[in-house]
Image 1 (spheres, rainbow, N blue to C red):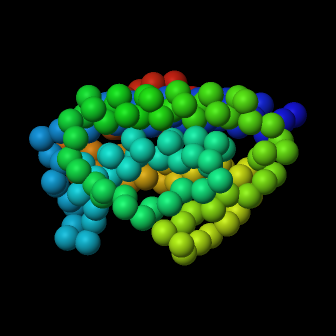
Image 2 (cartoon, rainbow, N blue to C red; image 1 turned 135 degrees about the vertical axis):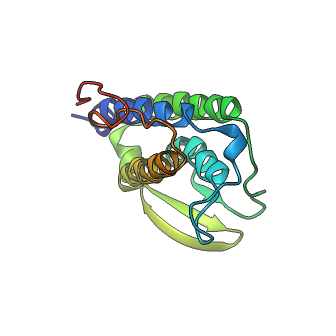
Length: 166
């Protein structure tokens, strides 16, 4: 089985769950944070919307350069969902056309001329999916603290009695 064939079903499942979480983000609460050291809700949701784009970059570009990155902003939930949907579509398409030889090649994260790290693409894509899942988990806690109903993730939540997704 190719890397792509193994990854796409998991990617599809995780992105569907993540989208359900993003749909619940209250736009008016973007600056809210559970603690002074915590990321604001709007920035966390924006990061979750952007992260599938890192899969695309990892598979299609030699590197990603953080120099000149504009930083976070507060966007409406509809804008975040559109960004997320575009990034998921592009990432899925990149996964489907990437062969195992490309998965075995390396990719680098840079800031200007400084290489922050270089790693194999297959490892990084799995890390990106895990990174999305991690921040989605944070988002579920933020929603709970704001008393927003938390959607089913891998099974029922206190708010949603959906069947298991496996």
